Length: 266
Ligand SMILES: Nc1ncnc2c1ncn2[C@@H]1O[C@H](COP(=O)(O)OP(=O)(O)O)[C@@H](O)[C@H]1O
Ligand SMILES: [Mg+2]
Image (cartoon, rainbow, N blue to C red):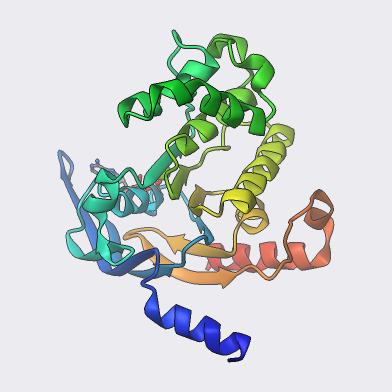
């Protein structure tokens, strides 16, 4: 059998990791009704890295909430590996990283990473070694006993990332995780994240309003528009991996950034 035949067969048999069909979401609040998302159709493959790009208010955070069953769609369906999103949530399939690292100030770096393991009753005797290995993977083993106030913004966000990976969630939902960081730190964390993703092949949904960040990281960039939030277009990123610092200056990279910017504008 040719390699292509094998790939085709496998593709036909497997449900996508994430599937949204005709998804709409309305919020009913004090200021009336908001149509946050309208008619979203999207398939995300297992192990894919997808960036969501768009201005504030276009429904990016809402979309992550829908995927992880924190809100239910007003119309349409969300399925995770062919099953209900709620079942995936209860199976701890999701790891979250937000703009605010939200570490507990009274716990050390290692104990912050340990927190989700305590919640999912990971074997107690293995927790410490596992947390230390995770911190080591982002160069923070030396800081395992440091408290959050002793860490820089970038270090705190690294702790938040490995905390999200601690219980081996297979889908990583990241909501503008690097937006508050300076340019240099942001670039370093992007490379850290790609290294982790390459090693562990999580499915990653990464929300950002930074065009070059989306292009640098993703396999595909979902460009969104507001009022109501819709998918304007989906751009495949045609850049080889691993992505490198030098690529940021190359014409291929810059032309993809330009293409995404055009779609954001129109
Ligand atoms: N809990 C909520 N109640 C009412 N409206 C909301 C709520 N959350 C978000 N919205 C509205 O839904 C729209 C999309 O919001 P959001 O998903 O936060 O967008 P983004 O993350 O792209 O900035 C916005 O108009 C926002 O004001
Ligand atoms: Mg948001």
